[in-house]
Amino acid sequence: MAGEIGFQQYQQYQLFKQWVALKKYCNDSDIRLIGDIPIFVALDSAEVWANQEMYYLDENGQPTIVAGVPPDYFSKTGQLWGNPLYRWDEMKRDGYRWWLSRFRATGRLVDIIRLDHFRGFEKYWAIPGKDKTAKNGQWLPGPGAEFFEVLRQEFGELPIIAEDLGIITPEVEALRDRFGLPGMRVLQFAFSGDRKRIFTYRISMCRTVSFIPAHMITQLLWAGSAARILRKPHRLLKTEKKKRNEL
Image (tube, rainbow, N blue to C red):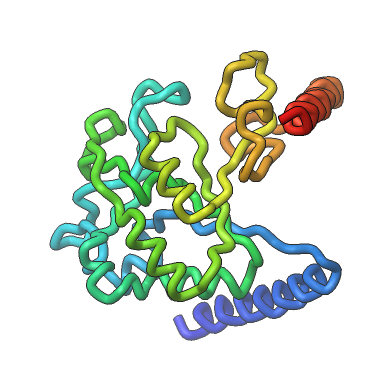
């Protein structure tokens, strides 16, 4: 095992050494890097192994409830992710120290953090650990504003993009806006033909970060469709600029 562990350590050393050099080069060129913090971690991760008291696990180390999302327009049975869920009450006891460490480590590697599944910090979907679909879950309260207050006290202004795609409630929007966090919009969703969609730039230009595709949808691989999509934002942005000038 010593040889295998040493090999993994060497790989990680080289990765971080090269990444830090790349980040410095980018920052020196006035380029900032965006990186992810997924809200949940894997069952077989070092984080779960070393901090089992922070997760809903049984005596055999298996999750009693797991993460996912309920049925929606993507899936009739919901999405069963299977990640073990946090015991937020336990994390709160030490002032969310594990999360502070996670943000601190990620902040050394990137300049802006895209916080995945932001709605899970307000409420998250908890599914029985042995279920085969996400249908039978329930919404449970996340840590909410208190969690982000702790982050702000530790780090000051939060360089966070809130991944708020999908069906988002007013409570989630209020949490996002309370801390002045930009949300996300996906270009392919915005110009799908439905002019009333919340994803359109006409409706939601302010305080958002736009991405061309998302990981769960088909990428822009054909020039004709890309050209048609990229013509529309120009017209919408001009319209919005004109409206603001008239106010």
